Image (cartoon, rainbow, N blue to C red; front, side):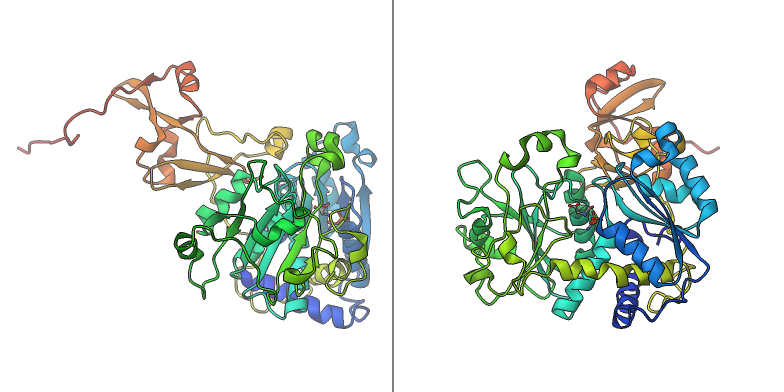
Length: 478
Ligand code: ASP
Ligand code: CP
């Protein structure tokens, strides 16, 4: 958890996730039987973006627990409209409530809120970044449907680029060993920072494979002919051999789902509000995976369909009565899951499996600052309300010496191509691959550049060659 609340699914240990799901099951069994749990407590419900389910189920959950709710709905109804900062807004709501749930269009806004709030903050969706409580609902649905989270095969379909539910769900599923398939709309594949995190942080391989049976989702036309003839798959189920071997042995390998195999389709809509281009092209633009009764025949006959909702037209309406469609049931689970999360975050129910994992208040920040490294994401809170933010990056170094900095607010990556250092009184710059990085504490000795032009503008000169010799310094003792 982060400062007692929930900002990213990665703030939760696996034990904490299991505790929420187990308590949610208890709550779901007797949804009206917990009406004194949060008596006397107030939840502030701050929704600066549209919402039906997240806001509705959070408010319902707090009411079902016997607590009360105060709220702001839409950006126009708060004094932020008059120019008040998010930070000040949160300072004030903290005084009026015992827990805050927030949805806001800036990526990293929930984290900034948590850093200034004196009560736990729960992220109800921060821009295209994360939506961790949706992931808890998704995982709860998967357990209810499949009996367990182990060994799942999940096809994540649609707008993987802007879909915050997808980003959080990937990180939620990775720890349970799921096999994932990415089935994106045209030009809406996973953003680089999510891909990098999967590979660097979770150590999973992403393989490109031909669409095979998934062609059916694109109306059978496949992706061929438009230069996008493959999909991504993460092969990571520990009990199975790594599929790379399979690919190498059979170059014509196509993704064939056996008729009996039980897949989970997790479908998402185009997030038109996050991209002006998408809004303009609307329905017309690009191929987009779609689920219909036809697609769900034969190979996918035993698969189920989830969707965080709202659905636009990526699932045909004739699927609604189909027993494999579980998206409305999934939305209903929002209440018990959020009842459980609120009870645990407010300390009204004890953590069980996660007992003893600290006091549930904080995970160490562990981020660093480096000269010349800035978050490039225009909708990150760090670029929208810089006065309240303390920029920070988690840093990873690849085998080639390349450094990747991930913004602590929005997760976007910055991978500088050059670094500069003062050597023998001169400012010189070198390709990043030459940097032998020893510890985070040494970072302040360097300055980082995206390209050579930037280095030269800062008056750094190119290091033509490395000095010869071992570079050792000897002192002759007396
Ligand atoms: N309701 C989800 C969200 O807010 C999914 C969506 O809007 O498409 O992220
Ligand atoms: N699933 C979800 O977040 O729905 P809302 O956008 O309606 O809250």
